[in-house]
Image 1 (cartoon, rainbow, N blue to C red):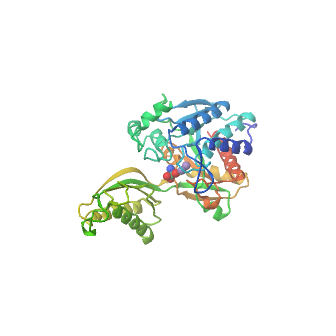
Image 2: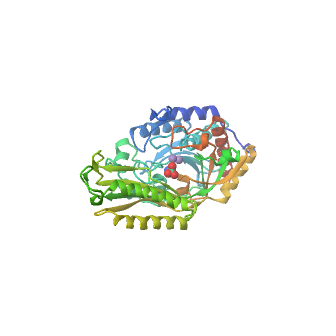
Image 3: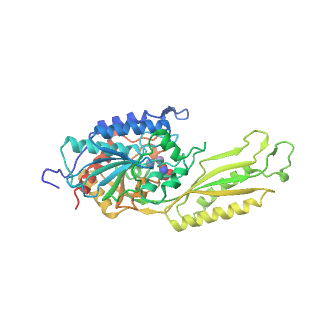
Length: 424
Ligand code: HGY
Ligand code: MN
Ligand code: MN
């Protein structure tokens, strides 16, 4: 750090907030259930493409050199005084789930751009370059694998595997990259940054319960996604006696109830289980379901307990096949990531920055998956959590963090990036 470099910096919270609200208008919809405006910008849809173009424009207005890689990951680079030095990377995602709010992922991307604006306005140079990244299909809800763009950038998944993934309409990710014009030329494997810091809403109640503004994230719990298809037999709802049925819908219901019994048993640690996708065929009132398609999302901070829970589910599925005449099932692995610890050194820089901004903080594990868990394979990485309202509800249009909370989070991000970018 030169004598001109301040020890900490604060950002323009009003401009940050305005960019969050402006981006939330892209892909906005009226949510009947909550009566709120939600956001629906599934990866590489036209809405996501429009959001990408808007954020790229903001990146370029902030003087960032923008590049797009073979996965559609977008990076904006601000040079440092030593262009040979590995950059400090920040960022997140702007693709959303179908019932999103304005903050999930977007805070980390727009917050990173706001930091760049402030450095420019204050004439602050850093030794290392700083880059802001936007990773493709972080949510995984269109192409079936979460943190996809960052997983390929970090080398856990191949670009060929990712490009071949399809959505429910059979469109491939590679085809959608080309259709939207985000099939960039840049080699996707990321050269290891010096460090990575991501600011994200907590999406849970812990910060509010502790009465603090900032979370210093210690790591991310394990994630297991699988698709289960149950094959029964279509039959007349009136004439078919119960003992002659192969009812795929009944089997699906039994799986959901059994998952909850695994969680409630307490035998699998802090297990969380969700069946978020469930459809039956032919999906008609007077026909016993011939087929049920469902997804199972398991989360566990302990890898051994996660493996035991997966084994327990597999055993239940095996027994279920014999429970009705002719019932069978297939299982397809969609995603699987182990518990990922974050770097102690980067966590210390974040905690110190929070202290220097007089912001109380608490250390906590992330319940949600994030791009940081993938980039952690390349370099020292950690995250800053921002407190949410309404028990931190997320993946729901009610998702909300106050302008002050967002500004505080990005103030801590700004000071953290400044300090990391002047590290030797
Ligand atoms: O599923 C997750 O944890 C993240 O929102 N992609
Ligand atoms: Mn997210
Ligand atoms: Mn999310």
